[in-house]
Image (cartoon, rainbow, N blue to C red; front, side, top):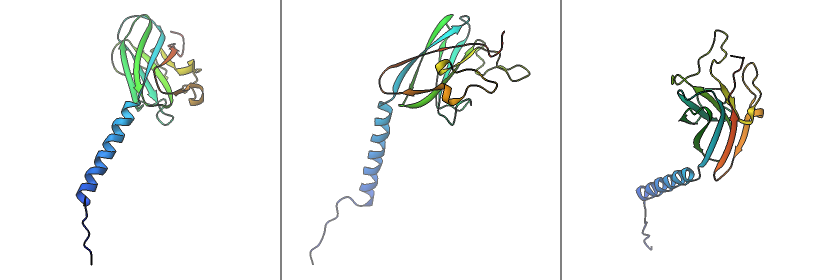
Length: 153
């Protein structure tokens, strides 16, 4: 009976699998898109402008997978965010106190100026996903949104 020589037993196959998984993870990171988000309606230079790219499941929550900040510049502030291609909605606000969260009045209405991609209409419970969703492709992308008060200041 001829003998067979097995090359690469279970241990070798496991390392090959780990290497393939790592290669796939790094390849996915290499395909991230840089998004320049131009935010208008910034009232002054205090604090930072905070931006989040949200999936449909995380939109209007604090759990969006991609976020970035930039020092506020009166008029317009540009914030750069990296994310893989896909569908996202952008939510942003001017954190002029650098508290890291949105202050609300007794009715739960944000005191800071807020904005959403596509300048989606602000409703009682925020904009609808369908109004704010954008498609992020590959390569550099630029988006402009406007900050505004939900109710007059």
